[in-house]
Length: 307
Image 1: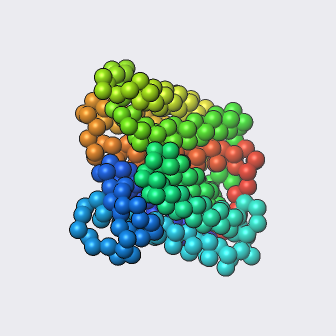
Image 2: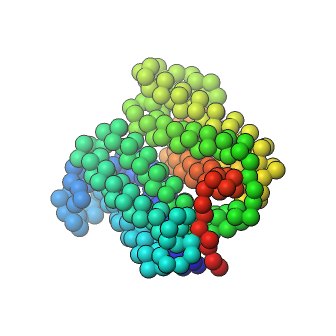
Image 3: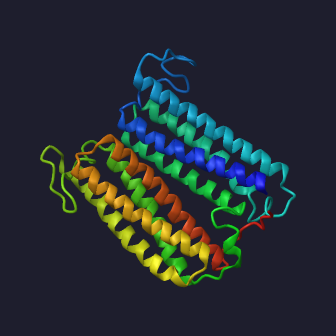
């Protein structure tokens, strides 16, 4: 199980890095660096590295290949050990590992569609949300190897109150981060409001763009209130659930602080990248919290990982 745990951590780490690097592609305006060519870049399998936008987009594609390879390795390792406890069957690592391979192929195809359609906002957001789903599947695989609280939660007893709030937080986190993708990709939505915490509308932005950012802000505030409430409720829970709740609450507070600085400092690229990276971490932490709370309540299986 130790080997599977390492493979799962590697796959999760590379997938997270790929998501964050996608923000760099968008922020630098490199999304069409390879033109409308896919899977080749600018018509070449190995294009001349003569433009920064092409290099950044090509690195993003190469990193996607590394993610796919890491997932195939995880699946192959789980398949070879499928007879071992905690690997095959319900609650084992094999099923989410297989689901991750299928999902990453769907992400790749959708990425190709996105390029062919010239980075249309709806395809970019769909690509982003499907990649977040992949991250959640990998989190399940990793927890089933005993990592990320997967071992400790087996001896804990949870409550339905924490579970319900954790479920709501995970759903709201997914919606908030997806709305963040829409805000980042719709014209003028990212700069629809020029002040914080109240919205000083940007005169150059259409009303629809302002409304998109306001919706994203409202969802973020609701998520913060909900996660802070979960953290308070989780004080009586087991250690794994409690630590996950505290991590998610800390991340949502940090995310709002980063967003405030980003707006007040007029959207510097470094803060925009940090905002997206923290959003990825927040989604991962909130999903992990919900999964661990479900396991602690006795409603979800976790494979019997062995040291």
